[in-house]
Image (cartoon, rainbow, N blue to C red):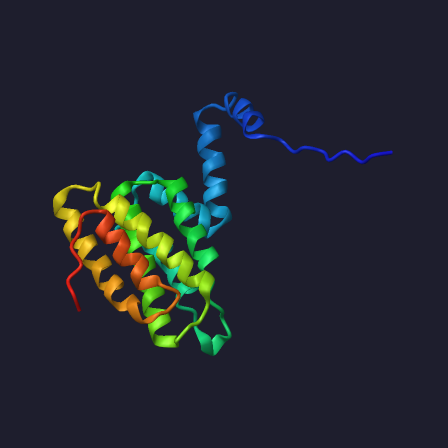
Length: 185
C-alpha cells in the first residue's frame, strides 16, 4: 500500500474563499494578519508605502544575518539575508528600494567580512551574486539615484579585493560588463 501525500489548500482555494468576503471581512482578515507577526506588519507597511522608512525592518533583518553579534554566538547567514531581499521583492518590489536593499546587503556583507576575517566561500558567493544584481538594477534607475548607488557599490568593489575567492575580480568584471572603467589601483 503506498502512502499518498495530502495536498494542502492552494492559493486558488484561498482566492476563491476571499472572493466571498465583503469589505469589512477583508479588513478584519488583514487586521488579524497584521497583528499576527512583525513580518506581516513589515510586508503590509512596505506594500502600502506606510511609515517614514519602510525599508527599516528589512535592513535590520539583513544586518542581523550579515553582521551577527558574535558575543551572542550568532552566526552569519547569507541565505537568510537573501531571503529578506526576496521577502521585500514579494512585498513591495519597488525597484529603487529593492536596489537600495541590495546595496545595503553588499555594504554590510563586505563590512563584516573585512572586520571579522570571515573565510566562508558561500558567504562570498552570495555577496558577488547580490553585487551583480544590484549593479544590474542600479543601471536601470533614473540617473540621479543611480549615481549614488553605483558609487556605494564601487566602494564595496574596492574593499572586496582582499577577501579571496576572486570576489573583487568578479566585481571588477561586473562593473566592466556594465560599461564602467576600473582604474588601476
